[in-house]
Length: 428
Image 1: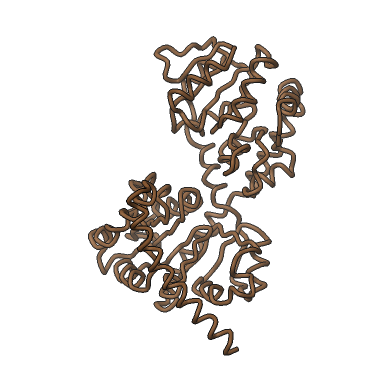
Image 2: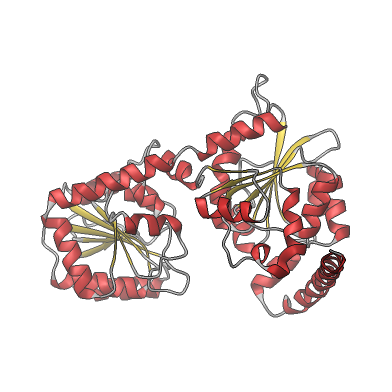
């Protein structure tokens, strides 16, 4: 017992020393690295921004997201709460919302997010920073999204008896918490009042180390993408282009994805098929090379006059892909041949269409589920893509069976936001 206590104290001390050293080293690296520069310089103004935005009498709900992906999971909860802050009858009346990010990739894109009263970086996890941060923010509740477990912040939240929850949580057996040497970090989890986790494995792992205060309620991103189906997805230029033809939409494609698609379009596509390709990178050279590689008539979003008689439409802009997916009979999602893996598979899935991806998808639970359900096809080469796309195009019954599975999967997994918001209602 004493050995474990000594080990925990030693590890906690070592952690704090490491944080101080890392913060110093990062300042040096920031001189030479643009991303690290944003990471360091962005934290300089955190406290002035918070002091300007919040007063001691404000009621604040704090959301923390590691990066953009976690933000998308927290977003349905944030927006549901924000919609009630002007309602005198709501528990959330006059509450303000703070969103913090760890990484520049999240903060830089969402720093002007309209549903938050303030968006900042999370300060470095030192004892001094943590105390100052919570003195200013004094949240009614702290909400961490998916993961990010900072020992000093969690320890101080627990010390101040601030209710803290995890939403869309995922735990894996290789995390420190579940190792014999992870006892000191495991203690940080006692700060959480409740865990809303995505799957049975996470709940089981938490139970194995003594935490039974958890509920499986799934991933809030399902609620986020389901809302897309209810919005106005009409795009006149897409309506004009498709001309009641069979449509394949390829979203967030990289070079390997495009190589496979171009081969299919050039050599196997029927004249009754049309293709809409939205590349991940829309650099002029990349778009020009893609257009040149396609032997069929091709038009661009940026063309002064879009050619509606073209067979291929290249979307060389951003921000409209989710709407375009609503027109698809089948969706190809890019990234599956790259190191990071596939891009967002839920946006097309929410429209209940068959899905096609590359082989790197195992980091994404929803992709694993849809592959196992046979609503999503994994392809590795030209022949596999040709065979599957031909079958989808020619066999309507086969295509409809995939559509049904995808729709049912989305509907089965919505509802996490409502469960979480109802819980927060009761706790603040």
